[in-house]
Image (cartoon, rainbow, N blue to C red; front, side):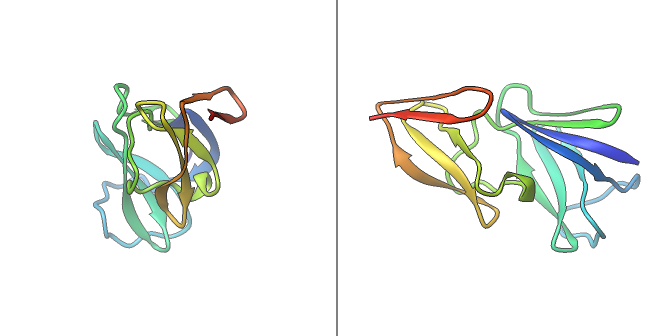
Length: 125
């Protein structure tokens, strides 16, 4: 079964998802996503299911072939998806840019105002 993952505000491609119920740390093959709760997604990465927080108000949801994870309130140190590597997002208070590096959100820049459009993060000094 193919499902695409929408990590709000970022969109990622379709990935194969196992149809069985999985837990963090369980073995997996390939890549895929599923919701483990209303506030967490699971990603098959490095042959194990790992937790991805979905702290935003829309949380984690599944609709047909799409798994959506709202990252808008995620914080520095949270896990991030392999498909998000090198991509940035604004912090919830719009004062910094977080970037996904080696599976973790890290603060890369402080801003007076951080905004996002459909293709980029804009950090005003």
